[in-house]
Length: 177
Image (cartoon, rainbow, N blue to C red; front, side, top):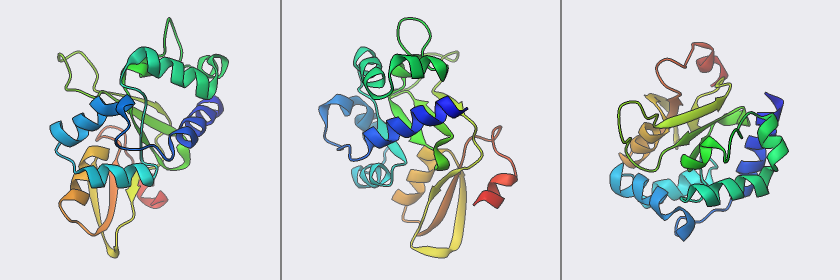
């Protein structure tokens, strides 16, 4: 747990200030904007709010980036590096949960088949994703970070909770909110 928290903190610190137009994550941005129909402004705001970050689209470069940010020994201690390169290197879209005890790594393309996972989530999901809206009198509950960002794009002005999947949430998350 503590090793993963260190990894997630280091990755988020390094990805703070990323730019949407950086060619290293062009495919990831294209997936969110063109395939999932999110606006560039919403994705950029999610990046600014440190909800979304990117690893390079190329898995080899993503692995090198992770090793540079965290060091291989910490990645191994956090159980994120097994084999030749970390499995998360193939999942370059990162969604950071509050408190950084969990991160979801997502494919930057549709799944190739039914057995392929679209996301890898590491850590303890005690908190949902959270988008502080302009109108605190209302709160919308959705499943996942993509739906959260879709609600922003649709013009919802209240707070938004993005639950980490229907099988991974519990009532305590509402208390945390």
